[in-house]
Length: 135
Image (cartoon, rainbow, N blue to C red; front, top):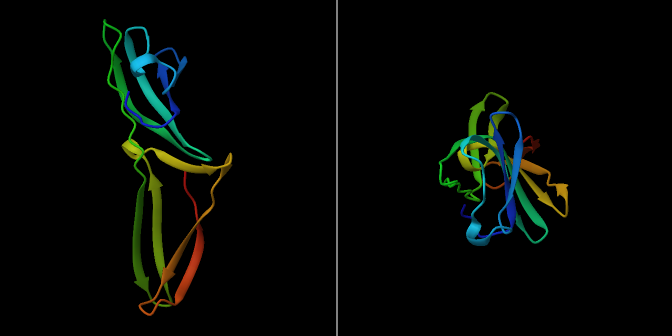
């Protein structure tokens, strides 16, 4: 597992049992897991009062007989904006995702951060704004 910040990953085995793997708890970031196939379903990375939480079917992890498997979380925030002009307005589609296109939520001091999408004209005047639904 590779992460340079505190956090955790959650994996679910074939029986539905969830395995919580804290990034900083294990020496050399290795964990003892039974051999088998796991679904990587979420990870969280923490930086002071901020944390990023990503959920989804992120990857399938195969733990071999030696009990090891690669698992890497990249704290990359991907923002997607797509807009189109139409008579009388502008339509904007926005999204926020993390590794493996997992749904991402941002938190500060334990509270989810509200995001707003704003659209400006060529001279910098605001054409409109709306809350961004994400996560």
